[in-house]
Length: 288
Image (cartoon, rainbow, N blue to C red):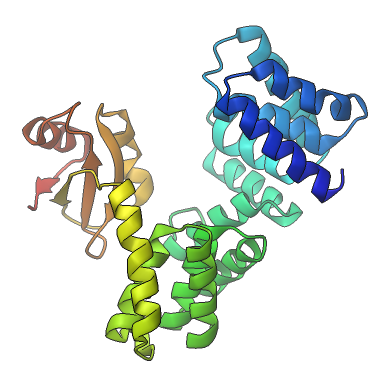
């Protein structure tokens, strides 16, 4: 399938999904699937399994079969999707090998995940910033905005690769152009305050501050609580937090022994959240 046809089909798919018309989505991709097009198999399955409530068991089974067929034909994103979303729990090493295969075949999503693994060391292998930068660069080159942000930030800091302010800003501005809100904030810090030795530039600072303020008006932040814990804590050890109703995200905020938890106040109070966090993560204490 040629890229311009794929883009046209994706645009029409979005319109059909916005209209809640799954039959129209199937109508778009089915002729290509009947021709044995692996990309069409993946796209139809992905859009049902990720973009709809999956309420029809028969359709879900058909889409899962399509996804498995695409993965068996070495479609990189089908392999990535099966590894990260739809397969039963497998051994960590097997998961990592599957993710590596998807990344080597060209999945930007898998390449991004591999970059995170090497950047944090939160996997069975070593922490390796040079490898993290290499995987981020592969995904960034495919237009993956989060990877463009991560690569740009690493280049500003000189992590994984020699410090390169010009290239770092180039990747950050590309990420910002794709709507990556973390890039808005970092670019404001760079151009307003000279962060990471970036020359102050009032015009660019005003541009990215405008983008940041627009984003914050449209996406007001959820409240969060900060917690401290004895010893180091890895991201995998916090996965249990997803089981707490009302928790919508978490992040490390100070080294390896503090983390913050974002929550939906309509679903859980701060006091109840503290109780749940302390029950889920041993030695966690509120740090706010």
